[in-house]
Image (cartoon, rainbow, N blue to C red; front, side, top):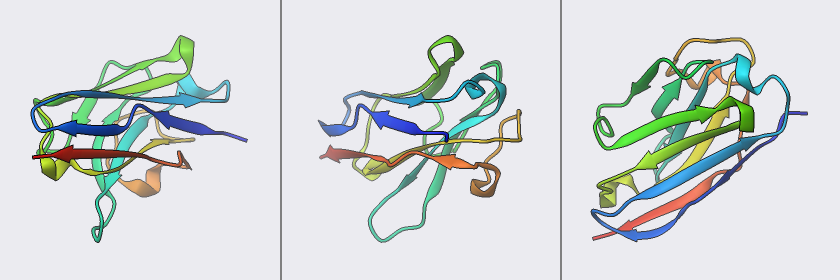
Length: 125
């Protein structure tokens, strides 16, 4: 059973930084794409960023491009999200997701088979 556990969320002031981590539990972690999604209160879950199986390719939503960086350490079964220059509109529950069949970057939630429980990020103005 694949398990993904996010950590690193919290309350920060606008302009500051946070780094989220997502630890995977199973041995195929390094073979497929990973992503971060987020869901703000009253809104649909939205794509934030994706990384391919090796970490050589990434893709970002326009709203976070230039401020957020996704990376992965396959030896540690962990994917990271470095969030800089945070804005109040970044406030949301952040979820990591892992595909079980796609190796390239992809934005579609349906392409991801496993999801973490989420970690709250709150940015105050």
